[in-house]
Structures are given as structure tokens and as C-alpha cells.
Length: 241
Ligand code: F6R
Image (tube, rainbow, N blue to C red; front, side):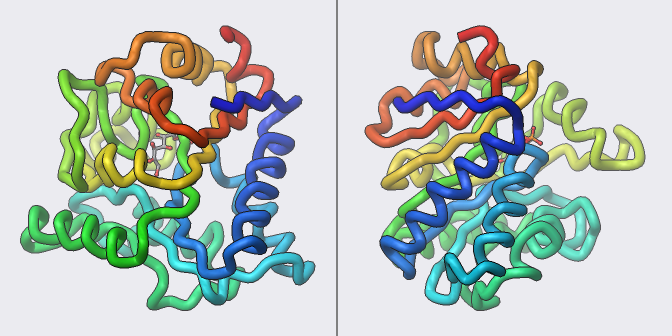
């Protein structure tokens, strides 16, 4: 695994965006796996800047987001559909029909999840997967547990994730209790993984994932078995390495 340490979140984000930009230049029709949350925001800011400068284009790219809450509408300001529009898609030349975000309100979630995995396979798999990491070591919403879940699935969010994500909502009661998340298989099959982690409260999860045992209690630890992972860290997130 390649561990890169930057002064702050902005520098880590810029460097991660450069990796994604290079991917798009090398392969304009790349399949990108995208994440939401605070960590990738500096990445998306920099990608928008690179696009405006004419350095990169998303016109031939396809994207699949990692996850979406269950039980809030797509146009809810805290939904991940909304987040992606607001933080990236509105400002770049992605074709709307090339954008995929799980449907947290699917009538038949199991059928939707299977179709989502299949759509990724049909697109040729993910070329580059962007990940954040939860304070509890989750990737996507693959929460700590006694096993790794292969496919896309509906998950009960843990108390620690509900607490962590409360900051995006008016109060704790409004945080959805479930999400639909890509499983570990599609993430592990991505050709390249770019994980961004910033801030002191990620330091323990980063340490456990990189140096700890490979265990479903720390879902990100499975990335030790992936041949091309970049850990893009700021000094605070790297402070326990
Ligand atoms: C988001 C996702 C989550 C987040 C993680 C960190 O799509 O899959 O795994 O990456 O919870 O969130 P932030 O960056 O907000 O600390």
C-alpha cells in the first residue's frame, strides 16, 4: 500500500484529485467509484478547477457512488444524490445517464442491489475507487461486524456512524438508520483505490487498517489485500502511524 502524507486536508485532496485526473487522461472512459462525506470535498473542488482549466473531461466517464441513505428523498439536502450534484456533477461535463447512485428508496432493495452490482460488472468494473474511512474503520457503509459482505446491500448503521453523521442533519433523530452500500467485492475489484482520510479523529482507524490485523471489525483492513491502494492522509490522520 502506498501511504502519502500531506500537510493538511486541502493538500491531500489536491494530490488525490491529481491521481483521478491522471486516470481520466490515461483512460477518458474510466469507470469511477465515488464517495460522499467531508473527506472528498477538497478532491471534488480540485477536480472542478482542473475541468474548468480544460485539463480534464468527464464526458466519456461513468460513475457509481458507494452508498445512499434509506428513507430520505433523493432531493433531500442530506441525500448523497443531492451531495454529488452539489459538490461535483453540477459543475463538470458528466453525462447524466452515466451517473449512478444507489436508490435508497428502491421498492425491492435486494433486486436493486443485485442490479447495481451487475451494472458495475457490465461497465467493466471500477477503474478507480475513491474512498473515505469512518472513525470505526468502515468503507462505504460496510460497518464493523463478524464478516465481510460481498455484494451491494442494505445495512443498519451503527451508533458511531449515526453520531458521526449527525453533523449533517438538524438533530440525531433525523439521521437515517439504514443505508444501501456497495459491498466489499466491488471495492476490492477496483483496479486502483484512492482512500482519503483527514483529521485527528481518523488516526486510530487509519492505523488499525494499515498496521492492524485484517478483520471485519475494521472493514478497511481488507485493503491490505489490494495491490494498488493509495492512502492519502493529512498529518493529523497519519499521526498514529
Ligand atoms: C461516504 C462513505 C463513508 C464515508 C466515511 C467518512 O460515501 O461511504 O464511508 O467516506 O463515513 O466520512 P467523512 O468523510 O464525512 O468523515
